[in-house]
Every structure is written in structure tokens, then in C-alpha cells.
Amino acid sequence: RAKELGGGRVEVFATQMHAAVVRRLELGSDLQRALAEREFTVEFQPVVELESGRVAGVEALLRWRREDVAVPPEEFIGAAEESGLIVPLGAWMLGEACREAARWRAEGWQIGLSVNLTARQIAAPKFAETVAEALAESGLPPHALTLEVREEVLVEHFQGDEQHLARLSALRDLGVRLAIDDFGTGYASLAYLGQLPVDVLKIDPSFVSGVGRDETLTLLTRTIVRLGAELGLTVVAEGIECADQLERLREMGCARGQGFLVARPMPAERIDAEVRPGGDGSGVPVRAQAG
Ligand code: C2E
Ligand code: MG
Ligand code: MG
Ligand code: MG
Image 1 (cartoon, protein in one colour):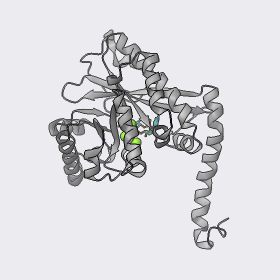
Image 2 (spheres, protein in one colour; image 1 turned 45 degrees about the vertical axis):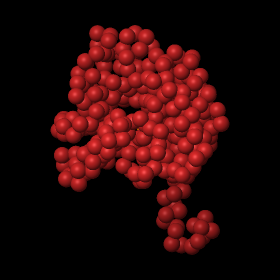
Image 3 (cartoon, helix red, strand yellow; image 1 turned 90 degrees about the horizontal axis):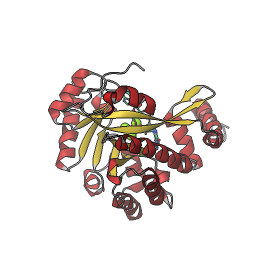
Image 4 (cartoon, protein in one colour; image 1 turned 90 degrees about the vertical axis):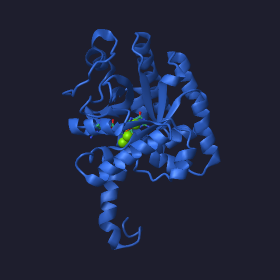
């Protein structure tokens, strides 16, 4: 196989790649069954307002336990993206997440919901309809839903493509909000950033983790916070793991944050039991969770 690819030089590389490719194929062929047998679950990670500590929303994250072992989302979402199964899987996920969020709101807890999207979901012919259906069926108001797209995906698949830009705008026309996820890792040009129909900018943990520890990363984070504010975006810092980072981000004027310091992703029942004591969640100072 290595020879076919062009000689002995690539042999070591090919061997390493082989294991990853085999694993992907294996996962890919198992995803359909897993979806049919309802092996996927959804967890929610709180997002807080840094100034008040109030829980502003939750980010929904897919989980898959396969033969009792948790498969990392990066792996199975990549495989689902390649096979196209991400379209039905993502639609199921969106429906589940909207239902939970609508329930919380109906119970008087006015939080927002974020759901992640891949390129293939956005490019699917009826994606805007899928979103509209999830909203209608759950009763979640559109403005309470934020759809997150990674910066890299926006750059690779959508930059300079009018048709794709129109798709994003069509989503926004439903009244939902759009977020750039993992900002700072995808090299969107600043001119492009200004054109995008987005409302929220999520700073990648690779910047946040350096806040207060690395001068350059601290400076870059401050610059991103200012840039986002100048563009009128809600800025969210992702991957906050220590109190010093949170304090510095707050001082920088970063509006929101999420990370293990605040709370880990957890099933809806634990959000009910731990994040929302008293049942309204207002002003609840979310603290580091053990699980
Ligand atoms: P993301 O959208 O950037 O989600 C945040 C990820 O960071 C989550 O990983 C979360 O568990 C993790 N995280 C949160 N706080 C901290 C922290 O303080 N420290 C560290 N080290 N990590 C933190 P997770 O759940 O493993 O998901 C990884 C990625 O997989 C997500 O990154 C997202 O891109 C993708 N993903 C997850 N669920 C879905 C989904 O339903 N649809 C799509 N399209 N992608 C998803
Ligand atoms: Mg995200
Ligand atoms: Mg992210
Ligand atoms: Mg990520």
C-alpha cells in the first residue's frame, strides 16, 4: 500500500494513517445502527455572563457510548460528516436540544441554547426547514437558538461563496443567531469577518488557556475581545479552567464564558438538579463541578 502511494518514504506515515482510516470506516459503518438504536445522548454545558455569574445559556454537545466506551465527538462527528449521516444525526440532536431548552424556558428559566453545525448540515438542501421544524415542534423561540459554525469551516467551505453566504443568511432570517466557533484557529480574513452574518464570537481555548500565563496569548485574547465588541458581537471565551483566567477575561470586558471551572457538560437532569437549584436559575453562581 505504501508503495502504491509513492515509495518507502511514506511507509511509516501510511502505517499511522492506516489505523486512523480503519477506525473511521469502522465508526462510520456503525453510526447508522447507533442512531437507530438510540445510542446517542445530548449533554449541556452552561455558558455564564462573566459580570454577574448568571447562566445565560447552554451549549448542547453530542455524546456516544459505543460498547460502553465514550467515543470523542471529534472522531464520530468527522465520520458522520464523511458518510453524510451527520444530516439525520444532527437533525435528531437539534430536536432533542430544542425540546429541553423549550422546557427550561417554559419553566421560567430564560436561557439560550447553542447547537453546533458542520459544513454538510448547512449545505443540505432542506437545512433551514429542519431548523424551522425543530423550533416549531419544541416551541423554542428562534431568538433563543444560536447555531455555531467553526471558523475553519466558514473559511474552507463558505469564504467567497455567495451561495453559501446566502444559506447562512437564510438561517438568520428565521430569527436564530449565528456564532463563529473556535475563533482564532481558522484564519478568516478580517474583511470576511465583517461580511459574515454572525452575532456571536467564541474565542478558542488555545487563546483562553494562555490568559495570564503567556504575554502574547493574553494580548491576542484582549485584541479579539475588543474586535468582537467593535463588530457588535457577543464574545464568549471557551475553555476557562482557572479563576485567574475568568477574572482577567472579565476585566478585558469579555461578556460570556464557559469552561470546566464554571461547569462541565452534563445531562439535562443534572442541569435541573445542580445548575438550576430553586428552579429558576437566576443569579445562581455556578461552581466547578466534580463530574
Ligand atoms: P466545541 O463546539 O468547541 O465545544 C466545546 C468543547 O470543549 C466540548 O468538547 C467541551 O466539552 C470542551 N470544553 C468545555 N470546557 C472546557 C474546558 O474548560 N477545558 C477543556 N479542555 N475542554 C472544555 P466535546 O464535547 O468533546 O466536543 C468537541 C467538539 O466536537 C465541539 O467543540 C464541536 O466542534 C464538536 N461537537 C460536539 N457535539 C457536536 C454536535 O452535536 N454537532 C456538531 N456538528 N459538532 C459537535
Ligand atoms: Mg461549539
Ligand atoms: Mg469551540
Ligand atoms: Mg472545539
